[in-house]
Image (spheres, helix red, strand yellow):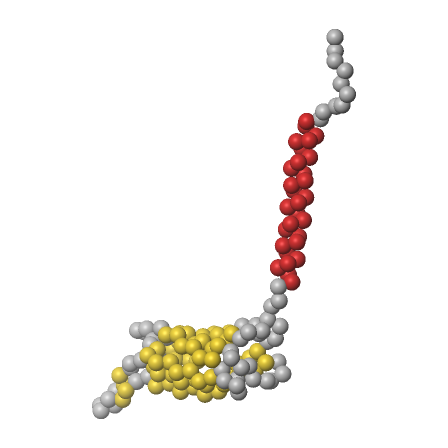
Length: 153
């Protein structure tokens, strides 16, 4: 004799339904995370930086007229401006290259003077650029890969 069933159980349907819910939840979670990342504010303003003066000394003239190359001593003045040509105060300016790194912060006029001591050129290298990176809060970073040229005359 067969028993009477009051409900039908579909175990296959229940097992297949659970992964589908997890997939839907994961898709929604990824969409929410993408929306949150999109809303993170970026630097809203752009800035520019110009090297206003550059002096480098890279050798000593001997009594016989030959030049002995030692290291470079470089002094660079940099002026920063925003889109409206207003000075950018408190920007961090970094010069790197020639085996050294130097950093300075801009003044209320948007100007910084950076002195780099003992920059060198490798043997057989007659010229090399120093890279300038400028960072300030609320601004996009500014980079100039050819800001300062170190060269042997």
